[in-house]
Image 1 (cartoon, rainbow over the protein chains, first blue to last red):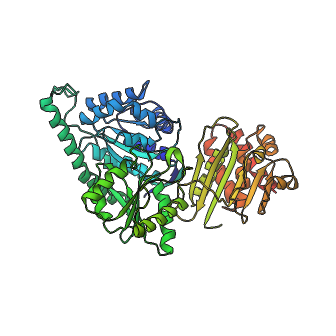
Image 2: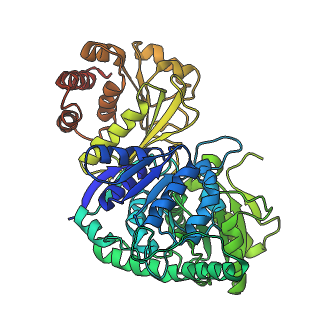
Image 3: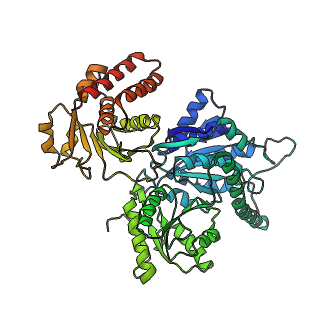
Amino acid sequence: MAIKERMSGNEAVAYAIKQINPDVMPAFPITPSTELPQFVSNYIANGEIDTEFIPVESEHSSMSAAIGASAAGARTLTATSSCGLAYMWEVLYVAASDRLPIALALVNRGLTGPLNINCEHSDSMGARDSGWIQIYAENNQEAYDNFVMAYRIAEHKDVMLPIMACMDGFITSHAVENITLLEDDLVKNFVGEYHPEHYLLNKDEVMALGPYAVSNYCMEAKRAQAQAMMNAKQVILDVAKEFEEMSGRKYGLFEEYRLEDADYAVVAIGSACGTAKDAIDRLREKGVKAGLLKVRVFRPFPGKEMAEALANCKAIAIMDRCESYSANGGPLSAELGAALFKNKNQAEVLNIVYGLSGRDMTVEDFEKIYEDLADVAVNGVKEDSYRYVGVRE
Amino acid sequence: MRDLIEIRWHGRGGQGAKTAALLLADVAFNIGKNVQGFPEYGPERMGAPITAYNRISDNAIRVHSNIYDPDFVAVVDETLLHTVDVTKGLSEDGGILINTEKSKEEIIPLLNGYKGKVYTIDARKISEEALGKYFPNMPMLAAMVKITEVMDEERFISEMKASLEHKFAKKPEVLEGNMKALKAALEQVQ
């Protein structure tokens, strides 16, 4: 029997962590992810789990300690947001290149400048080339489900890469909503025990981890890493299928909402997608063929698959909740734009920046975007396709 | 109850407006509703104006924006009436609840011509009598349940008793005070 509950996104992910009972969690607090180490510490103090919690003095240290623990052979996680992730930067690459399946609960918050604590995807998008798998959630349910699936993906022998399970700061992390939880034993059986093939505490296999790699070997290591990321696509789909059999909840690399016959599509990531769905339902009642492609997995990037799903659209708005100062839109715009070109999609494309520093995105904002899409589908993109929504100019 | 009720809470940091919104989400969840309870975060500190929100519905709730056209508004601190446009977007079919010792006649002129229902409650008096301290969120919560009709009063009291018994298992005197505050609020909201 599924468990009906109501909780915030942070509570939901903490609950998944409790059910998984990982071996080691080093963490340093930062808003809005602070509750995660706080909840986990409570579980440990109450004797509900036996995870080893390592309080550290910075995020560089929390990721370094996670790398050490994971290399030793422990199932490891940490949590952070924004500048905390930025402070991990150097070692994020080390975790990925050492092929350590660490899970990171990332609560998305903008990187500082101006200082702000609210939702933006600039933290995780900045780390998009670090070699981590990235999965995003629309709401607390998906944040929970993604975390339950995380280790199965990361620890798969064809993958062995660290994974970032992301949710929107405050909008998801701090909002209480209904959720359906899985029973403890179902989660435990689904995630299973971690038996790494190679690990430092194995006395029968002496090995070095993370040594200097001369040019003669280094590129092959990176190529293997790239292959592992490509392999992750199928593993993510396989794990999702098994998860669906257990929970009844279906996941893929992305979600298509009323997209099949859509003339106008929005492509977006995270909590705003729920708001877009309400806008789409309103527009469909008026006969407007609006649809949504919600990106769940950003790394590996399902470019070809998304381009194919968007093949019949007349106009597409690619929406980034972060700026890359390219004068061309954000990272999703750049990468999906390239995929659409390679796939020879004919749609007009708008590159939209929205929701920076927690700027609200409403149903009406989405309705206006679909109006603009209907216009450019007929008249072409007259002004620059790179546009802001919800900003005072 | 309507299909979807949207509520906006105005308070000052430290008064428990966010807690009241989360408690309302809790009790509505307990009777089988789909709920959202969320605060809007800014540079909060004690005494700064804050906003919190609720959506309550029989259907799944997908929207993740703030609420601009609420059905109901709760004002936990009446000094906000002078600095925040609390009736902005407020439906005239809904209503506004204000924590004040003033009469409705004194409050209405401060509401920018709002034509919907106006309710008042002296949450300070109720809280100080029941709990010996000023915690306006419990009386405000009870009053909101009453005016929004999200659930009947008897069910509300029994749900709150069960949840507070759990929360204050080691402090029965706090439980009793809170229950007294809730019941007084249901009677005294005007």
